[in-house]
Length: 357
Ligand code: NQM
View 1 (tube, helix red, strand yellow):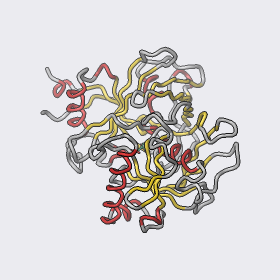
View 2: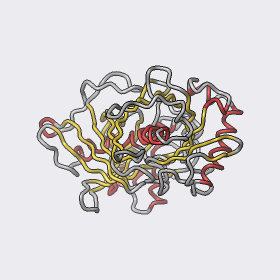
View 3: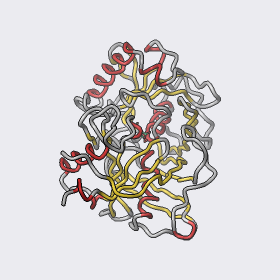
């Protein structure tokens, strides 16, 4: 029998504003190339509609979380994030994902990797992509994850149970430094940019420098072919300065267009994924924007309405705002830790049958 005939145990979850397929590492091939080939066939890639697989035909719904018992002391589980391209035969582990992360704790309890606590459960998660730690806490009354609850997050209809996620070592976790080029501002392709990495390598650009307001809806920005080309060349050139090499096949760094806040928040964002435009903003993406705009002289610093200390950052995006609480090392703009609230929901649990090779 083959995996095509027997299928593979799989849970589909919404994690934050994303959706993905969650697997136990042991249920997937040990060889990375074989695993990636299998995941393309599970998700239905490459195909713009992913019609022959379970992918959702958008980068935000073509994601995979791979979970195992942690081999590292002081953490409970290892979480490897894999982005499965929609219309290309590409699976990449080069980026992390804080939205799919929101489902990892509940999934670990569902699969028996972590014992549930009495009312709530805290799971220490090693994010393998960036070798950094996230601590997730969520309700588990009666020993099972409870998904229903009262928390609304922008970009998701309705309400669900909160998943609190605390991060402590995100600065430079993908590139080695909060400011990977060593500069607060670089000139790239005639535009001032700030390259920053607080968990998600990102190139901050003033929206007005690219001839847009920064409040346009994603479909409008995606339809602008001149803008797409400017974003593409800026990203490729900035990535070289960030020490990331040729990123033409990679999904990082992201390019985020910044403009002043319009709804009482901290800053307005439009985040390129890097081709499609995010309908909200990523978790680590939002934390990276927050970290960047705090730095005096950085792109966006003069556009931002920075919150008073002890108040959260409210990062405005196309479907609302993303709230992130950041604790700084006293007297500096260095990030000590951050906390976000997400929700996650089990949508389906069963067996998935990949397309044959
Ligand atoms: O930045 C999309 C998402 C993400 C990433 C992306 C994310 C994060 O919203 O932590 O969550 O930027 O590709 O799922």
